[in-house]
Length: 477
Image 1 (cartoon, one colour):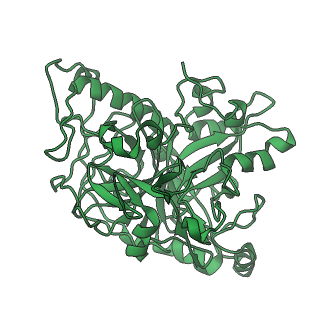
Image 2 (cartoon, one colour):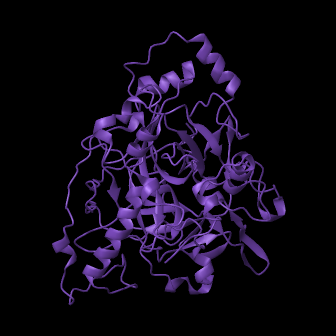
Image 3 (spheres, helix red, strand yellow):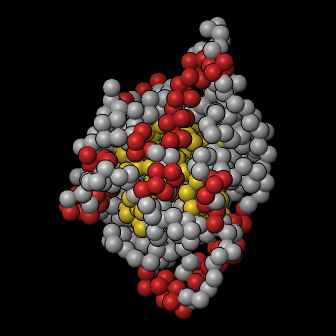
């Protein structure tokens, strides 16, 4: 794999299904150095990094929400920024945001590791039955060890299908019945035999369905397909700082369940809770932060951001973690620290390519090539969830998407790097710091997008997806 993950011995506190849980760290929350970023880590954990973690739970009851109106808290992680709100209000908004994220989120088991995914879309059915074809968002680096056997959606795959199918043909007598995912044995089978299996876990379904033994083997799903990965999604342009092999760390898997009943159970009835006309869905089309604040006014950006993720743990492997401290009523915010974005110091914005150049272990390898990220990462403070949290979705209290977790730094600053699903062109004094793009809807500078894939391979043939039926817009009350 193209990633070198550092897992620091800081305990995470997870949530039950689904009461909020307090996330506690041993180290105090220290701001990073002004001119340096410690080597971050991908939030993916592979089989060599498995270990037991301390799990401490604190449920959030209805009584906890009814807190005193006089309670005032400090949501900052330094002395320059103090933001006071009633704890009860923050807990209530956190519970709503995290419950919604829990509806969307999965733990992904696969042969060489674990990660986090979330429901982006699903195909509507004509017969009224529960949908069986689903589109799961995560990171590209989460799926870069997947051995896909076919490529119906014309994507650049992490391995050639010809090589994968040859390995499978040569080793077609291998018995995988006792192979558990996320182990050395299963990972070696990927490289040696072209093996692929995955399992999807939610707190409501994990114990019954045992996803760590694979859903292809148990015939709950068909073999997943790579539906979209933004490889060379921007035309290379040296003057704009867009190299060849450019990408954003994002991918969409197509998962087809064996039957409607299995799909309904494993998605926890998502399609009935979030229908075409629903107004309570996550806003996947939300504008980037710099649409609301100019770069000079980013100090006014005080929103809390929330996530539900699956950092690695052996004591409670089906239970998610959340980035929320119940006692302090703290979540993550855009960091107050200033980082260089192509020479310009901007609060909470980090140049993704320069970060990779400085720390080459962060680069993603794809079919023998090292990819180059373009654009920026949002750099958010507190609760840098550990390995396995890669791919998790971040939103504000109202469900407006911030982006997808790419990496974290645990040693000094306890910060996380988030890939924006879309960005305006960030430009100052004629210099472009981040190109304009939209991974979901596309933009004039792109060669591909998720919407383009849906139009090319689904709606063109008379089918509809949830997002296409919503006319590619968010519906609000």
